[in-house]
Image (cartoon, rainbow, N blue to C red; front, side, top):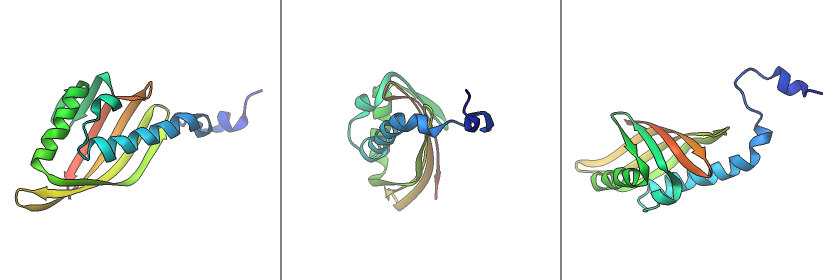
Length: 136
């Protein structure tokens, strides 16, 4: 017998009850992603797969070393960089979405950015990443 709630769910929506174990792991992974990796710790190899691809607004980065180099460049430009998660993370299937606010010190004083992350997860690691960032 088919569950009527599943039959009546709009196409494309996921039954989140079935995602509880993936959801908890995805939430932990995202917390490490934003509060450890992007806050300057050298943990990219622990969080992303060897075939990781990051889609940034103006280029792609590949692999844990490419991601770690991007994070390191960001920290050379912006000192005292810290992040607050504003929305999420929201987990649906193998996807995680979140919105964040970053503050730090640039060459000419304080800076503030807002951004959105979309991550695809497989086998407990980030395999693909899309980011949108703007100066606030």
